[in-house]
Image 1 (cartoon, helix red, strand yellow):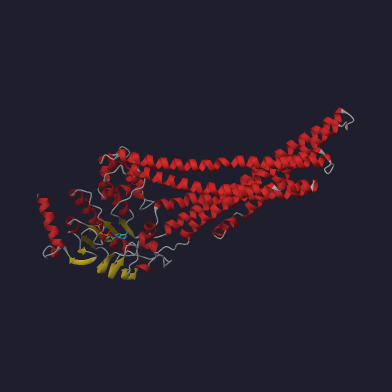
Image 2 (image 1 turned 120 degrees about the horizontal axis):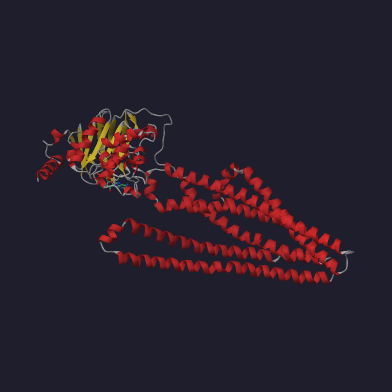
Amino acid sequence: MKELQHLNKYFYKYKWQLILGLIITLVAKVFAVLVPRFIGNISNVIEQRINGGFSSDSTYYDALLTNILLVIGVALLSALFTFFMRQTIIVVSRHIEYDLKNEVFRQYQNLSLNFYKKNRTGDLMNRISEDVSKVRMYAGPAYMYSVSTFGMFLVAIPYMIYLSPTLTLYTIIPLPVLSFAIYKLSKAIHKRSTVVQQYLSKLNTFTQESFSGISVIKSYGLEAQTNTGFTTLANDSKEKNINLVKVQAFFFPLMVLLIGVSNILVIYIGGRMLINGTIENFGILVQFLLYVNMLTWPVAVIGWVTSMIQQAEASQKRINEFLVEEPEIKNLNEAPSKITGAIAFKNVSFVYDDTGIEALKNISFKVSPNETLAIIGKTGSGKSTLLELIGRLYDVTSGVLTIDGTDIRQLNLNSLRKSIGYVPQDAFLFSESIKENIKFGKAEATDKEVMQAAKNASVHKNIVGFSNGYDTVLGERGITLSGGQKQRVSIARAIIQDPKILLFDDCLSAVDTETEEAILSNLYDISKDKTTIIVSHRVSSAKNADQIIVLEDGKIQQQGSHSELINKDGYYKELYEKQLSEKEI
Ligand SMILES: Nc1ncnc2c1ncn2[C@@H]1O[C@H](COP(=O)(O)OP(=O)(O)OP(=O)(O)O)[C@@H](O)[C@H]1O
C-alpha cells in the first residue's frame, strides 16, 4: 500500500464526499438488512395462520399487507441509498482519475527531451490511461465495495447473532473459503488479462505501423507478408483470450457452488434447530437463508477487492516512477528575464549521455542581435544539436553558453523559450486547421497576422488555393501538405510570435531555390532586429548571412563571411563550386 499513499492527498481533497458516501452506504445496508426481517415476519404470519393463530381473515390480511408494504418500502429505500452511494463514491473516483491524469500529463510536459528518448510512447500512453484506470478502481469500486461489505457485516452479523448465535456461526463458516477462492481466481484472471493486454498492444502497434507505412508496404509489394504477420499475431492474441475465458468461466459457478453449500448448511442445521425448538419460528430460518445469499456477494468481493488493490498498487508504482522523475532541464530563475538575443558559445562541448556521442567539441562563436549566422556542415556534424542547446532542450556538457552575457541556465526558462522561434528539421503539424497551426506560435494572433506570417513564409498562395483556405484541417502529421508546404507553415508558426531569436534547422530543404530566395528575402526584412541562425546544406541559404560557420564532426572547421570563405580552400568553397555547377547544369 506504500505506493498508493500518493492518492492520500486526493482522498483528503474529497474527504467530505467520501465521508458522505460512507454514511449513505451504511444507511443503505441498514435498509437492506431489514428486508429479510420483514420477509421473515411474512412467513411467521403465514405459519400463524396455518396454525389457526388469527381470529379473523381481516386481521390476517392486515398483518400480511403491513409486512409486504414494509418489504417494498425498505427495499425501495435501500435501492435509493445504493443509488446515492454510487453517485457519491464512483463520482469521486472519476474526479480522482481526472486529477491524477492531469498530474501525470503535467509531469510529462515538464520532463525533458531525454525522458522521451528513454521511454517508449506506448509506455507513456499506457501509464496515463491503463494504469490510471486501474488506480481508479482502487479509489472508487474497491473503496465502495469495502465500505459496503463492512456496512453489511456491521449491521447484519449482530442482528443474526441476536436471532441465533449457533446458526450465525454455521452461516459464516464457508464465507472465508469463498473469499479466498475468489481472491485466487481474481489473481489468475489478472495474470492472464495482463498477457491479453500485452498482445493487444502488440496488435495495435503492428496495425498502426502498417497503416503509417502503407506506402512502403505497397511499393515493396509486402501486402502478403504483412497479412501473415497480422494473422500470426491475431492468432496468438486469440489463444491468450481463450486462456483468459477459461479461468473467467469458473467465477460464477464457483460462487453458485459456495452459495449452494451455505444454503444447504443453513437448511440442514436451521431445520434441525427448528425441529428441536432451539430457534423459535420458521421466520428465523427464512431470514437466515436470505442473509446467506445477501452476504455471499460482499464476501466474494473481499477477494476481488484484494486483487484489485494489488493491481492498483502495481499501477501506481509505475505512475510514481514517472512522477518522481526530475526534469533534467530545470528553471533556476523564477523572475522573467528580458532577452535581447546576443548569443555566445564559449568552449562549448556536448555529449549525448545515452549514446556517449560527443556531438559538439569546444565550440566558440558570437552572434549579435540583428545579425544572421549560417551553419553549414555535413550530415551528423552537430548542427541541430547546436540549435537545441540554444533552446535549452539540452544543457551544455562543458563550457558556457550565454545569452545577453548571462549563462543560459540562469535565465528564466519560459522567457527564454518564448523569445525563440524555432523551426525544427522535421516540422510537426497538429491535426488542426492551418490557421490553428500557425497561431500555435501566438494564440491571440489576428487573422491578418496569420496571413502576414504565411505571406512572409511564402505559403499564403498555396493556402488560399485550398478550398477551405486557412481553415483546411490537416490530417495526422499534416499529411495533406507537401514537404515544402509543411516546412513553410512551420516557418510561419515561428515568425508570427515575433521572437528575438530565430532558429531555422534546415527548414528550406524541401522548397525549390526560387521559393527559398523569396523566403530568405522576406526573412531579411523581418529579422532586422533579431538574432537569426540558419542551418542549411545549401550555400544559397547561407551566402547572405553576416557570418558563416562550417561544422565538421562537432568542431568548427571554418568561420567567416561568404566572400571570405569562397576564397579559402575548404569545405565551403568545395560546396559552393559544386552547387554552382549543379545550378549551371
Ligand atoms: N537525440 C540524440 N541522441 C543521441 N545522439 C544523437 C541525438 N541526436 C543526434 N545525435 C548524434 O549527434 C551527432 C550530431 O547530430 P546532429 O543531429 O546534431 O547533426 P546534424 O549536423 O544536424 O545532422 P543533419 O544535417 O543530418 O541533420 C550525430 O552523430 C548523431 O548521431
